Image (cartoon, rainbow, N blue to C red):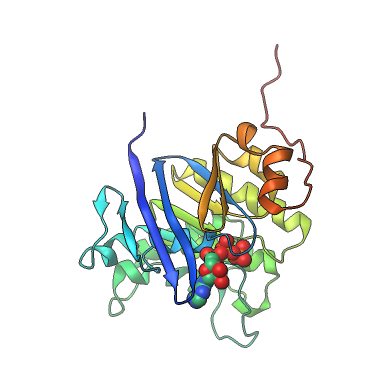
Length: 258
Ligand code: ATP
């Protein structure tokens, strides 16, 4: 049994009038790939923010990588957590190329005053190769497609050499092919870098192949939790989203019998 790397106990988060999490408990083992699913406003983003310390607990406790998160250790813990958000609008005139943007991921480790050395550039070039962006390394960041921009966002996150890989709707507003490619890339990275991954997504059809476990969220609560086969049923999803949703029968790849 792998050890626990995220442990959330009865977390409550509120933003003035909205209660975003109403007592959420979740334990994640090292190496798990978890898909987090639920309607808009369910609390999915907020759940990620209490792990990477961007959100503030009203009550409850959070342990990350074996450490109870406190004011004093949260900064150092955050360095070990990679976070990829939804596609952002980038000014086409932004004066940085792909390689330089990926290097931004290392500044948390380097400190602002230290210049990146050969070792840092090697890490950046390796992650650009992993995400398939080597050929565009010198291209200005604002001159990329949405799918390419998300690959760079993932490279920047990996340049940080994280232990936890958190992604918040990384495929939103991409076309169907780019969505599929990005989810496949995330799975490849998860496996090759031995990460623990939490993916918030509305791409239900991609989840059974990618995820070990699915967490369903609704109204600030965890509403379902288990293997994709157990949790992603027509009945569960229709109740979760309050409309009939037939499950797309995507299956894990199984080896053909010889
Ligand atoms: P979506 O799928 O739309 O991204 P979500 O499941 O990620 O939704 P959250 O973004 O976590 O949901 O939001 C949960 C609740 O908290 C919502 O009611 C939302 O309006 C509220 N909320 C989130 N962020 C803030 C904020 N910064 N200020 C006030 N309310 C917020």
